[in-house]
Length: 269
Image (cartoon, rainbow, N blue to C red; front, side, top):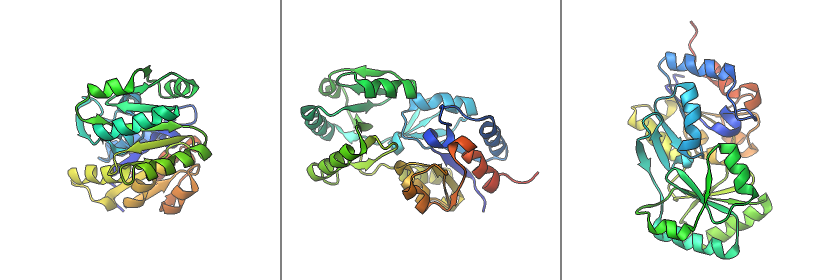
């Protein structure tokens, strides 16, 4: 197996629980890049919260963010792909959510907006190290020409299951729903997922799907892990993700990304 491209999720995969990258992972990524392997991220995060890790690893290729809704050059920040929830649909669902006072974020380009700050938003901002701005979401939409990247609803898993059913019933086939955390429900354009964007990204570089390794843990990683040549789940991944992976590596706390790259990517010297 000749892996030419490695795409890894960030939270609970590349990153340890304290949101840092271990020295072993840093060194393993350096070795893979030295062998000519392209290493990139495929994350649900926005570009601003991803960029510091790209800089730490010296990643200067495009990174996949917003679960595939945006591809942006890591260093120059040039946007190569932006597939958004259209304005009219964004207006309709945000209006509906505001009536029910559900806690949610609106992601617009590289900013996060919330109708009113709350504990979920405060904790989220601290975790991703990006400010969450309070604002009138419908007025913000009036200034936008294309649409929004993503919405996230926050609540306990049981409540989010109810909301997922509501969204599907009220807006059939108009969103792709996924989750990177049990207490997140993420809504994107129906054609957006990490797998679709990753395969397009690889094709643009002349790389076949069988030459791609994807590593992840959450439900938002299912499509990319199941669509590439070598789909890898970390040991702490959801059972649904492990079920579609070809290889289960060690956990994010045990350098699972390094373990997978050492086993399947690095050539013996």
